[in-house]
Length: 118
Image 1 (cartoon, one colour):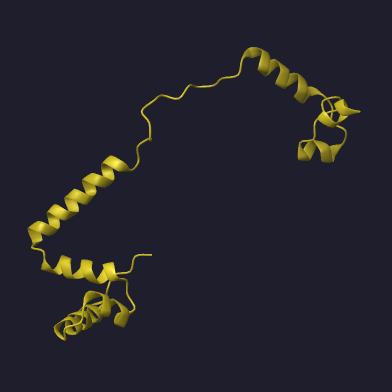
Image 2: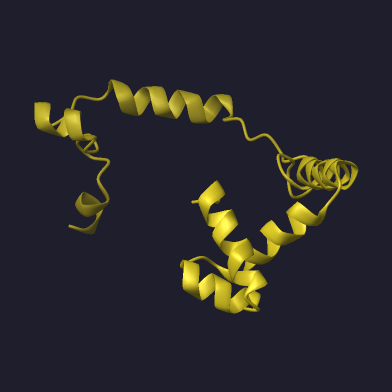
C-alpha cells in the first residue's frame, strides 16, 4: 500500500541528507524504501510546472494502457442453436432421482456418465 511521507519524516530525511548520508542510508535509517526517498527528493526539486507535466505524462500513459482490451480483435459471439435449446429443455423436463439431486444438479435418470459405464 502506498503511504505518503509525513512532514516529520521529510524533515528528518533532509536533516540526514545534510549530514552527508546517501539515499540508501537514509532509507535504511528511516525504514523506508530507497525509491520512496529518492522520488521525494526529486519531487521537491521540481517546479510546479514540471510537476504538472509529470502528472499529465503519467495520466496519459495510464489512459492509453489501462482499461482497454489487449487485442482489438472482435470475439465471436457464441449462441446456442435451436436444437441445443430444445435438448436443454428436454433434459430439464426429465424428473430427478430425488430432491437432493435436483438441488445439487445431479443429472436426471439415464443421463449420468456413470450409468453409461455400467
